[in-house]
Length: 255
Image 1 (cartoon, rainbow, N blue to C red):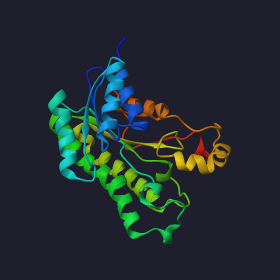
Image 2: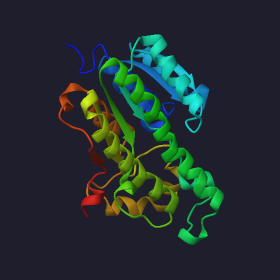
Image 3: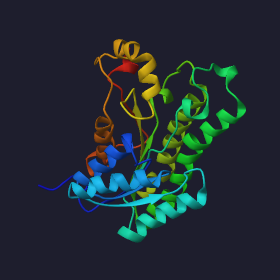
Image 4: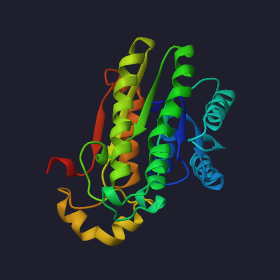
């Protein structure tokens, strides 16, 4: 039995852990060759080792998604190794606690914290699309999935810069979907809820009971559950899906 991405190639940013690692493993399971990119080079190599141990094919790349030259090198590296780029999962991102903004209301954020959040979580996605779209245009099509969040759909207290960036990611996704449809390129976003990752550890430690109580399915999500949506969106099974933002949140945004 063949996978739904047999013969495809995929680039995953933020692939060193969490949702990115789970996606890299899922892409490989479904037959894709995977380029795993991460700012933390060792983490990317660890993901590659897991993919290869499971019988897949992967290579590691490193770079900073806020730097155009680094992003171009990631895309070029994937194409140099595999000949083309069929799927891209733009997943690299940071949380408020990583910019010193834990628990802060809108007026309490520093300009530096806000700028850094936008730089990584919004500009980084745009730079990835900027280079991926040109490559996919040249080869006649492709599929892109951007990691947004439930914070891209609703407001969340004490997460101003994060919410602003993730709303922006959904706007970028919809606009690119309109602009590149004629080129055979589909662009979608996935909107995770509260998922068990390293990035969400401080939130889970502080508010686990509150979050679980409000989530209709009564638990946190797992990275692999996001990965399944990403892989489907990149596959031909989602051939009529573009410009969409899919919640994978245990029902959080339905409440």
